[in-house]
Image (tube, helix red, strand yellow):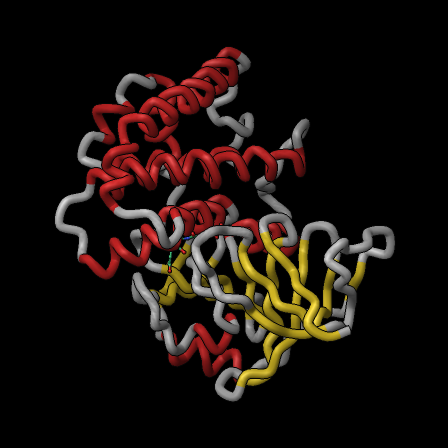
Length: 315
Ligand SMILES: N[C@@H](CCC(=O)N[C@@H](CS)C(=O)NCC(=O)O)C(=O)O
């Protein structure tokens, strides 16, 4: 049986999307709570420095980024599916918009309105999401603008829910909840749970509120709490199972190919560290690198190809 280990913290909005995917698929998983700000000494040896949350561990294979985690869950546990016809893979594109523009507006509003945030947490998140020149006062000044942006975009979503209801469907994805639902839901969960004005703001979207209540019933599957030290030991004792694989049609324009040493980094302005390793899988949607860590041993770290920069270190 596949032993799924999710490294996350309860307040992480992006992780709520993954927890709901685990719920939709009815999976057993181990929950490892990580500190909300680094250092994360038992996780970093496994990720090679990737610092975002969530991270999925399956033995000595490490899946970074919710896009990659959901693709892997979908590959291993086919039913019920997260992707649905007619959009299929294109739903990932809609999720890029939600994870990008919508999450950025939601974060501006939530951080801009937050009172009594610990200074180190506020400084870390403002730098990570908005770059080192941004200050919390900038978010406060921009907040009203971003409320208008959320208002417009949530109107589109509410409209889609109304269309689906007319067709007899309760979810954005159709008859059953899927990727579009869990991705939209984490934004709504974040706004209603972490912004004082969130519930009042959202109350104008009738269809969205009914759908939110339905989404709340999905749950998170069957999590069991575990320790980060045990998870690290599991990685040490395991051998990565990722086969060497390349898509023969797709040439990666970065120049990277199987066997090369590369550095991988989220395509963001937040100063995320690079993760280095030797390419073992590369196609249009996934890149995986093998690395040896003195603490974790042999590891393969997986990233989505879309949204990540790859730099060749050695051919
Ligand atoms: N593209 C990433 C974004 C993840 C992300 O930004 N997560 C937030 C938490 S919701 C984060 O990493 N915050 C900083 C941290 O946890 O160190 C994904 O989809 O997983």
